[in-house]
Image 1 (cartoon, rainbow, N blue to C red):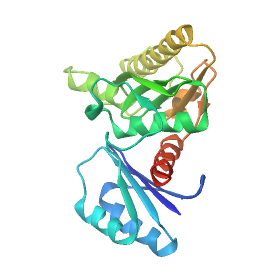
Image 2: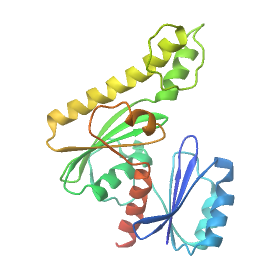
Image 3: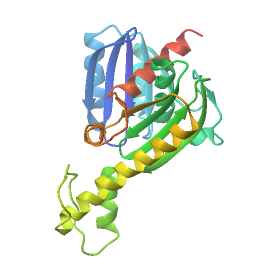
Length: 241
């Protein structure tokens, strides 16, 4: 079995795969990752592990996994199933590498736009010829709320709210500004890619996918496990080498 570890900005996702199927999925705070992984190793026969992390390496975590399975730490140097035309590959986030790989795996021979709505919103396009040139990065929902509060003297720090009423108060106006701003952005970017690419498949993933999928008018596939699928594919792709 494969163990997939995706360490993001706010939390980590852990998954156990049997071939291409998820048999276990957990979330973890950063401080609890090692403990939860030890429990997974005690419960499952893990032979191969891949780590994707946007944080500083945890040497204790890596040491434990190396002692108990084969390990791949995803970097820009890891072999991937697409042609990477990114001009600065060393700066390309490992999460985006995984998402593009998932697009290749789940939608072969298709033009795919992957939208990952998390701390930031990333847009990554891969062609039907498995060519990746890059994409777009913009602030996510929570970041937009924090920015309005941080850079002004009077605007409050609000929690995200799916508000559909009128902007008849400062708080309601802020909610509408964040939601309408991000929705119009996403819809506009989707239209731009659709105009340039025939038969475009659109995938939405990330922590804010539930909020956004209910508001977007475009035809999309919402997949909460997309990055995990991509990491498992990269792991198997390297093992088959």
